[in-house]
Length: 342
Image 1 (cartoon, helix red, strand yellow):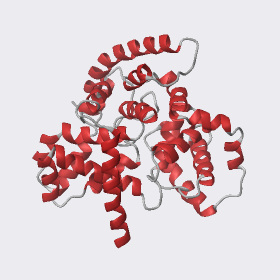
Image 2 (cartoon, helix red, strand yellow; image 1 turned 90 degrees about the horizontal axis):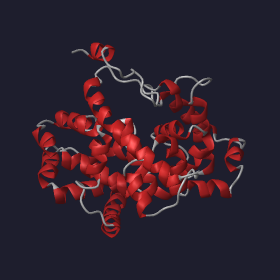
Image 3 (tube, helix red, strand yellow; image 1 turned 30 degrees about the vertical axis):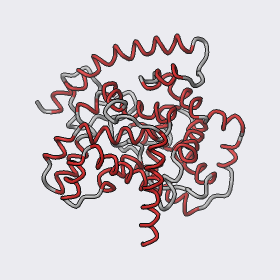
């Protein structure tokens, strides 16, 4: 059945609740089957969150909250909870008026021009990012400019626009988005967005090391076809899986990212690879493997965000912080040595 006829026979809109247009090849039947199950989960989680919060808008940290976050934060509480559990709210309240002051400072015109070029390219399939007057493009531009003023070391680099765009969809306002971005860039993902991207390159090497250990057949397969893990997975890390995985799945990942930190990104990457071992090994050409890595981020397993997140905390295995820190230390030394050679 063609996608257009699927759409016409479906109860699901061609635009999702976040403003994203569904692609021509969108599988309405699979999505409806997933949503019929997931709506029950959402209803149950919403009731439990309402009981947990009571009259409050957010809660502190703790094992119960961590468990609730892993099972998904309801959309109506998501922005406030991200601010609370990440520490972004504390930063914002300690510097009242700071965000607005950044927008009033003299600007680096070269950076501003780079931002101006990228802003209209952000989420071309989202109806909220098409119009400066009615949509979110002005807010996107403002947050990116303010952050480039605040953090001169990072300034602006491609990929941040997608992160800010998704933050705006969730928070619906600029100042909270700015402080969440600040927390991501400076606390949760240090050196991910510096000019040499040491943080991203390090984590890609860590992923390769874990795959070599846990799935040596995949590691040898990728090596045999002379592919690099950077070619296959850089976008995963740079965009924090935005524009990679389905939106509901990305938001569930970000729930955990803001609470647990950046090791969640590694868990997701490892899960995607290990869960799709047979598909990867069956791909026998350079281009076929690249297409396989794109396909596994949008298949049935990736769409079912609830089952996917359950797998993230089981398939990826034990992830002690000490072990991950040691891996990052070793891989970082390799990255720095490679950077020096260039």
